[in-house]
Image (cartoon, rainbow, N blue to C red; front, top):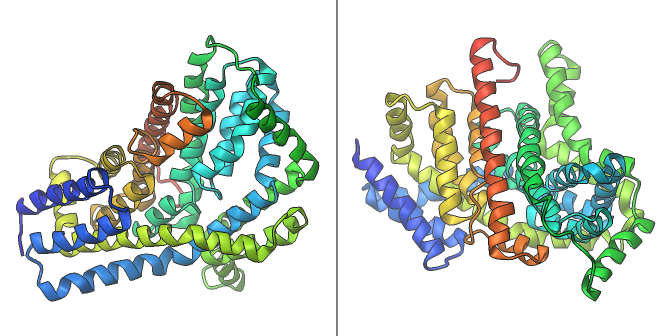
Length: 453
């Protein structure tokens, strides 16, 4: 097999092949990742009999660790969406902030809703409400599109149980509870800087008015659905319930003697699969009266959504498995260490490069963490902080090769230029802000030692 700097050449070629196949030839990322994995194996002169087994092992190990929770996460999100709990959360936050700070409520609501519901779905769900708010406050729609877009992408890229950060935590062997806790610490400054403060630049733009039938219908739907939705308190409780189980489990394990009955129960309940399963059951029990579909239909729709996501996630793990079996991952980390590039910086840069070049946040997160995960242990760096740096790298730099770019442009009803000015720049500022917070946490951890890191 190839060794030394030849591995870096192969790594660069592999990434180039992956990007060209997705961008130029428009291959589905699942197929592109598998083909690139095979070609990488040949390029590093891996024994031909080991290539397929390495791919299968990487695929299976990845789905074995996160497959169940991805499926449950989508079911959980569908329950909240079908019951209108997501709209209740948005309306509740808006009622608490008032019109003057409506952008803060919008970006916070987008962030919270995108944790169980995918970014594009969260954006579409919120747009009728956002148009109604813009009209009511007599402000530019751009203010709220920026706030909503940044809030949804930060939640999508940084907080479990969305597949990207979930894959990162699994590949980095990071503690899930600590990952959730510190991801929230990193995320809130990010949405405030990118979604709220940056959005103020549009204050002088033309005020939005509901001046066509389609927008009037959207506003009517946004208001009328309040009549058949759960309360704000119930919706927030349901959203945060599985996350709180995981966090409480980690607190109990930290303060109680290891091996005690309470710790054993806490470890069981705090497992990501169990916590999200309990959360999904509790969500159904509390919210099923607000369904217009049967629970079986909600689960079937979730299964349809989960299929391709699971395939892409598994293929990303397969690619990472080939990269690491060839020695590229270890050599890459060792080389960057010799150049005095910290692991957190390396994670952010690789993730950001993949994000800007091929568009998908999830692909960038899964691929980067699969490459760096097995090698990080030897560096002594915190798996949680390196993982969060990877997530931060996947937040911004959205260009027209990103499907989310067109979701925001199309459903927001804005031009490509305005989409770049709001979503792309705002999201990039949010990503860098989250990364700065990660660096601050890394410095504090080196100085005093932070819990869970």
